[in-house]
Image (cartoon, rainbow, N blue to C red; front, top):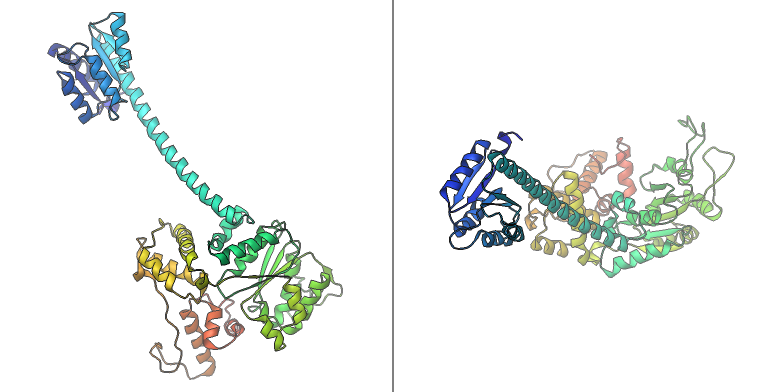
Length: 492
């Protein structure tokens, strides 16, 4: 080892003989060691604690306490216990040497000594001490890492216990932890998901307000069952143009209609062996409802333009936030299709029905969004949590996620307080209201588009909530934006 590499090494010499201190100092200083000296044991103890030397050279016979007693105390102290102690003394009887090692010494040098021997032993023991410290530091880091991993694994186990129907990969991919909750309403949903695990062919109808996690429940049913290796195919029935719904679901053959330049698989064929998720099923055209009923009854469907029917093994999970019974009463939804879809019904509770779950869900979104932004997840203050618990959340979990994301940005990664929560007021779209930032266009089509954009902006992109505020059907919003070349009105 070069002299420069040990330039900062420190040696403490405790000896009551000035000549010995002089010889040892003259031997070690040229090798790059910083020398500290003490002429008696108590002084040496205090100096050792203050300078924390790499090696201590200790005499045996000194005024007051012996070198053996000083060595024992050095080893008993937490701060100096790991410092190697080398006795340098004229006492060379075997019993004296044994007493030195029993006191905790690392080595024992007998005078007269050779300078080369002192340098070699100090160098060896200081290097061993350095490696030992590094090893302990690394072990401490590993213990902390193991602790963090155990904590993380315990949390994952807790999630797996509550959502045992899900694979861990699917949970991480789809954020299904947001289904976790201690409220009775959520425990009921989780119990129903678990129960349906044994019935992979049973069609399921999921009801609940927009933003309550109906698609998450559908994915939980799929990824937690025996169909998990097959595709999960989601379809938004309200977002598909009316003239393409049949082709989207059942596929078409080349030449079936203008623009059909090749055969195309429909959602039923792509979902074969897996799950077809029909979101907003209440908006399906009555004519298409009859064709869907046939598929559910005998498993056969016919692609548009095809002469021969196809068969498939598909579990259908449908979802709606509308009252299908009311639609049945007015003839807008087939009763026989309802009973085919609703072999088992799961209702997802609104967030306002389970305020006790809000801190858990908010914390989940904080971790998820902070990771995406490369930030350390901040804390939600108690006043902020109180505000969240009191909010009605018309947009449910989706609205909570938007709130958390905005608060994370506004807080700059610091503790989130009530001032960071941008709770949106009710939208007022009446003419001349203070909420207007500009007059509406006189052209009817442009005025409709402007009102829809204002409603979407107010609801954070929640199409269903925007449609409710405007008093129109959500499909009207989708169609209006499709006519402008936008597939999703929620995206700018």
